[in-house]
Figure (cartoon, rainbow, N blue to C red):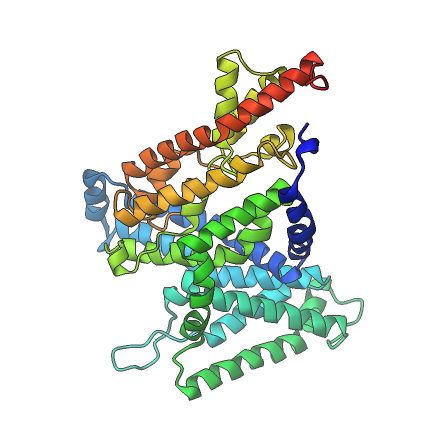
Length: 447
């Protein structure tokens, strides 16, 4: 029945958007960016965990960890050190991962490319400056973390690309076969490494000579404006969420296609909120961001792409009322439990949602509704901004909202969003349920 209803929307997606999505999903730089950020994700989550512990909203707890001292250093400060030493290395680790992935996609040594990328990253990153503007022995966490992600992406891609070009064009030092492979690879990396590191040394020289400050701030000023229109505004976020659902509808992983482009902005906003929260200044007046990674993961895509938690709860309601088709009765336990943990592949391909025109409208609309309600709630101050904690995407709603914002109001907002999603999906689910019942009774053709 769904096939009979295939119309203009599906045709537009398949003929216009799908070829673009396929090309994007195979575009090696985007794959490298995705892999690089994924490499840093364990550190982001670990840092976020310690941030939650150090700022848990119980006054007695925060007072206690601030009072516990080890040689004049509080337990709270130690937790902060752990957070900065993990979450605060996003740009640096992402740079390594991006260069490594890009080199490996061209069948060259990713580890060597990643090491060269880190060296280049340190070359262009300014030193800490003392009060009399004398370089100190250290570098600011700001530029090693989310604030340095733009530079990390560019250095990673340039390093990976140049490294593989040198190796694949055999511009390298060859060692005898008797030399251990690890040593041979290190010598192979000498020529491309010297050229790449020298290149970024030249970049540092030019930026310093021109009086542009440093490469991190320069790129932030140039790129944050245009990219922010898509990743840091209500309109741009709605477009991104729409495209995510549209690609999923035709069977293409929407997050891998769309989110990879915008995720650096969301992560940078997350890092900026983290810094403001630690300083006690997390609000819009001090430059806090509404749109951040936890905003997307924990308030918009509840249940996964398309905010399908509302759909699977609707299915469970039909089963409980004993009004469901046999197909939905079987699917209910298979989709509800994963859906609570934001895993929706059983729903996407078991319901199915992919190429199912009966459900396409709520699949596109539900997450956009979540964007609007969450944005307005945070804009108005009813719900606090995301604190910079990156909650694992598998964390169930209600709990994830509290952890992401440090406020109970966010959990209430998630519950409201889930109810709205159920209401959006339910009329269309009733139509699908009716179709399935007719199929099971053999009356569909007669209808």
